Amino acid sequence: MRADAVSIQFMPKEEMHTVCQNVPEYLPEGKPARVVMYGAAGIPCGGTHVNNLGTIGTITIRKIKKEKDAIRVSYAA
Image (cartoon, rainbow, N blue to C red; front, side, top):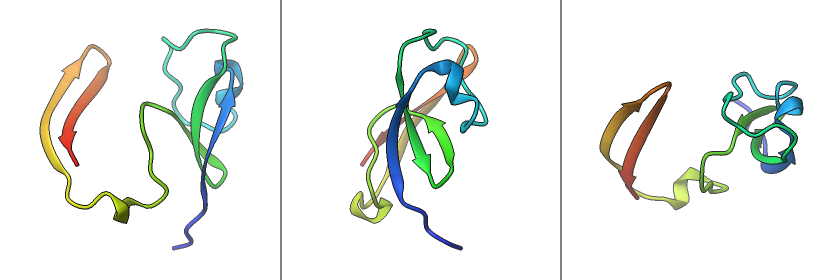
């Protein structure tokens, strides 16, 4: 499997559909938001990201909670 570089781009919600499979409806219209790019595929940014998962170490999932149409995962790293 080829490892593509991870990068961050800013784009309006209307443009996200060109690189993201799922775009949350609650994002504001016309305001740039962060998108994490994995090669040519993007994911709307929901928090902090690292360049390599190996730098994190051990991760413990503390809680998983469904909130309306989203799932919130609490963890310790």
